Length: 221
Image (cartoon, rainbow, N blue to C red; front, side, top):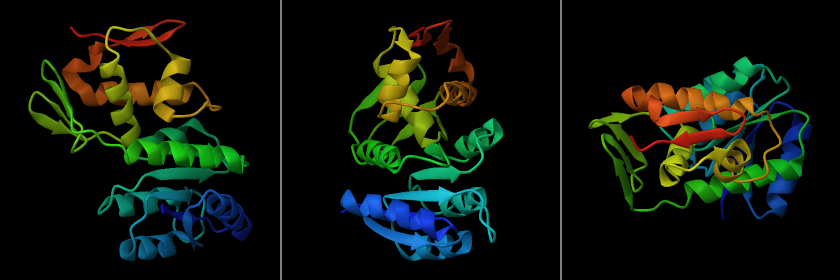
């Protein structure tokens, strides 16, 4: 059974998420604040964390950074604000997904299922293209022999694009296959991840080609 940590200072939100998650068969543990979440996650392992940004004791970004020091648990961030800055900042610190309140509990559970399916399905294969290498067993990406740090979503984007090299990938196709569900968010979410991924790839950033009005393509040379 998968274990989920739900962190929100609003009890009504916690109970709503817990109700739907329990119905899906997940074990749910609740935390009413950021400090509580850090303490609980230090003692227990979770398969995913649903984390609110705006909390009175410690904001979600700080909680995520603290947990990331010792664990790589996937994180879905909740926020009453939809500013692009919040999303970009969240993605930069390794957040897997971002949900703006008010949200659909059913859609949230679809996102949880998609992330769990992705993170629990690790292959032992290796993809290598010139100096760019992905080791699936360890989820390790290296550029010219140097390991680079990617967020979970950046990693998934790179894997999918390299597996479909030379193919024009529409925005819809990328969102549906990498996010794992019919995406209802802003297309800028994809553009932000592509921008961050290019930055991390360094000299290989030009392998990701923008197709105006269509999407992206990963070039082999």
